[in-house]
Amino acid sequence: MDPEEILLDSEERMEKAIAKLKNDLTGIRTGRANPGLVDSLRVEAYGSQTPLKQIASVSAPEPTQLVIRPFDPGTIKDIEKAIIASDLGLAPQSDGKVVRLNIPALSTEVRRSMVARTKDLAEEQRVAIRNIRRDANKHVDQSEKEKLISEDDNKKLKGEIQELTKKFEGLINESAQAKAAEVMDD
Image (cartoon, rainbow, N blue to C red):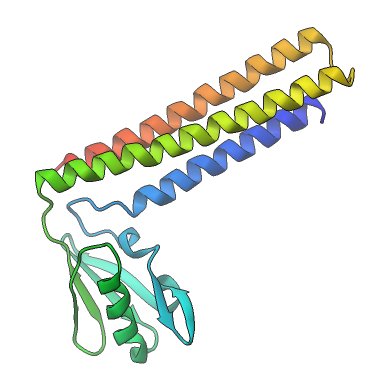
């Protein structure tokens, strides 16, 4: 691989790690209703596991309530079962047309466990970023072995890869801290 390809590939993979973290963080409960809470929920409907957002629209009309409107009212029971079976800890209420989820206020203990989960998710992505750096450095060393780049270029490229790593680790830290602050905020 040439130096530009190595850098571009590394940056792309690091951006995907950030996107995954942000997606994972939307599923962490805060004291407010957020449609992202049920984004990862899969419903046994039409004979297969279907993502909730493909069979219903989710909205938050109030700060403490989510409303799930199925496109097909026949799937309401399936949606209720999926919510009960999930680890959300929420009790669905249905009127035959929509499913309502009341989001209770979080206790301090629950908030702390959510912050811990946030830190765990951030650490997973930090490890992913470091693995990407390791792979990129291997490619750089391989390129030097194959005489595609000089020793000076090797050092320069490794420095640029380290800069990328620091930048993306900083973004991970910012995202995690913002989510932790949001969880701890009443």
